[in-house]
Length: 238
Image (cartoon, rainbow, N blue to C red; front, side):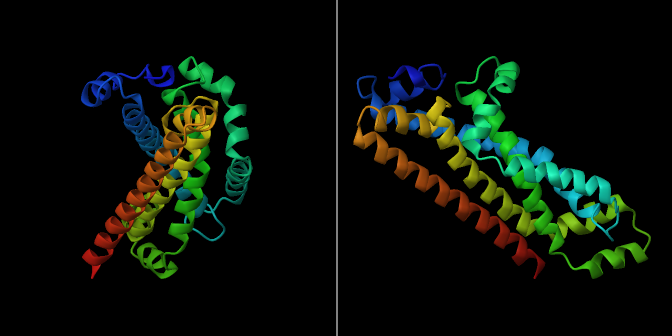
């Protein structure tokens, strides 16, 4: 199996299952696992920060329950600034930070750092958009009953926006699949690394197209899962 994928503990499983003599299927499965791992962890971490950030962006807006225009403008500017940087450049800019945090900027674990930081402002805007779609009358009704800001956020805003938030998770994960493929160009692991270093640079067409097919399947699966979960939430309300 190629050296790029030799560091993972999953290598032994895949080579034993498929046969060490046939590295293409084994490497494809391992690269798929690495991509799923990167995307899952990055999506989770980005929502840990991005969800509260999106809530703050909404609630500090003019006329909302925690109106604070200076804070809103500062946070909004930071989010816009990060989102305006193309990911491949953002990836390179974060090499020193990535190396500081994980000791290297190459590999699956290292890729989680730029993937997460790039996704946080994206998540914040998705959350902000989802919460802004909630009818203001619901918030006014909660205020009239003496609800606190935290109660409005936890009992009104987030529950009402749940279907949109679930779709947002799917959109974020799909976005990160594309980002992870770009990270593969600098040895970030996953399907991007497999497709670039072995499909493109070594002219192995089977590897290239196999990686593309798996990426398409992953994206379709994530979108279908997001749509299904959101539809279940909507149906429960009827």
